[in-house]
Image (cartoon, rainbow over all chains, first blue to last red; front, top):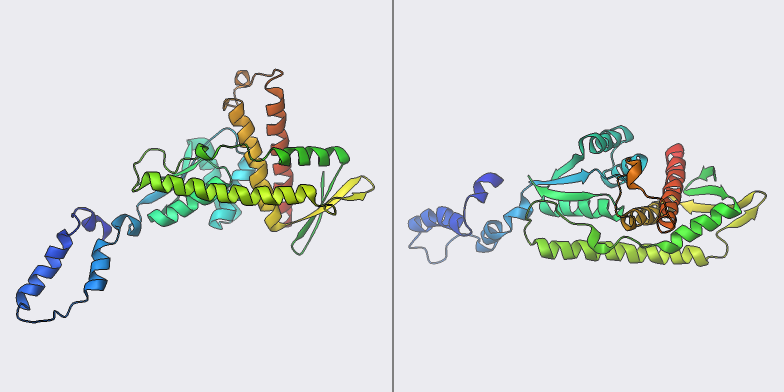
Length: 126
Length: 157
């Protein structure tokens, strides 16, 4: 299911959409042939963790050296030097660069990695 | 300071006696950046933001503790720096260079924060006096060593 449509519904709203028609047809069946465990997990799992709507951003600061920033991008993201330099220059000239668009967990991971090298990195909701 | 060679995973460097004492003095300063300096998010309210911020600080602390152990081991290791004609030679693995870069940049950033985070492009923002001079020296020395190790890694490919 696209993340956008799930976002508009409250928890439980989806249950009523999916389950109600099913039970209406199968009202006489003693043991519904559904897999509540699987379905429940899918419906109640934190949607924010599953969506890819978090931007990993590196912000400009006057202290981190340009070569150092390029090196860190290469190490953390596995980029080749040219791509890392392009993002470094974006940080330097535009004040910030979006380095990745990820799920909550992955974005957190990347921010942790960048901050271990003392870069000014944050994650922002898209 | 000279990058001598890379053989497999070992990078060999040569430093003078003075450079060695500078490097060790810089490493002894670690850590300088407060854990609370880094924020997970700048603008947006994230889900479980406080818990995630705590997680970030715990993760940074674990990394810092690990780096500190490595620094202390390096400082106390007797065979690390071997005397040669023009000073000392020492070997570092690629992994050791990575943590050394993290440590050096902590000292650089921490010194800059202690100076009040001046814009280094604006000359008038960096006031040179007896109080700021040691911080400026640390900041510049840490940066110099960073560039030295980065050049070696870059040259080695």
